[in-house]
Image (cartoon, rainbow over all chains, first blue to last red; front, side, top):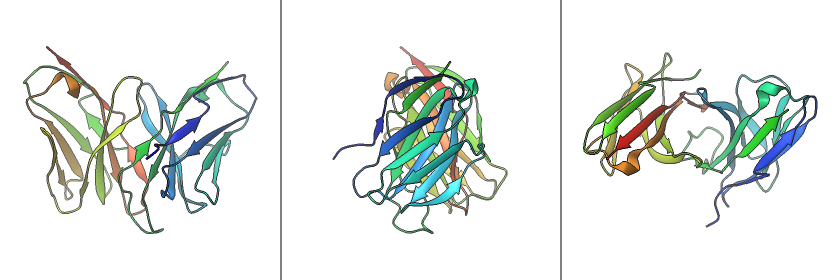
Length: 117
Length: 109
């Protein structure tokens, strides 16, 4: 079956602009999580969506937002970009079947490499 | 809150063993382990649930001590293919999966 697809793969933006990243999860997966990866910081949790509702949120400023559609596809938006937002943004989907269910194996996409200049 | 991984990096020769530790200051429900090779997406290795069960994946195994909120990943008889960055992910009762900073493993012939 098809894996997690993230688009675009690479993006260059200037400070102050906004950006939208897209993630299509594995078919049947209703949970989508977003992570920011930078050297030395590992995977920083941004948020998780389950059935179009945000189930969890990390410690990022309000400039970072997301949403999930009825087909489980998810988008992440970053407004007023800063140089420090340059990173690899990873999306992961998992087969969580209920709001109160723990996370199962997560399948990661290849990521979107965002460079802010 | 991010779990703490140690060591940050380890260099091994083929056939040697290594242990990667992951600890949290909060009570955990589960611990996940992933490996990421350079330029690739992280790949799932295993999940350990409360109960201290030890799991294995080829010659890679892990344990989870819920009382100490710690997990350890054991690389046994390492192979060149074990090279990569290993991440532990911890889940609390809020279902948020938080990852550590990673441990870079380099296996040399």
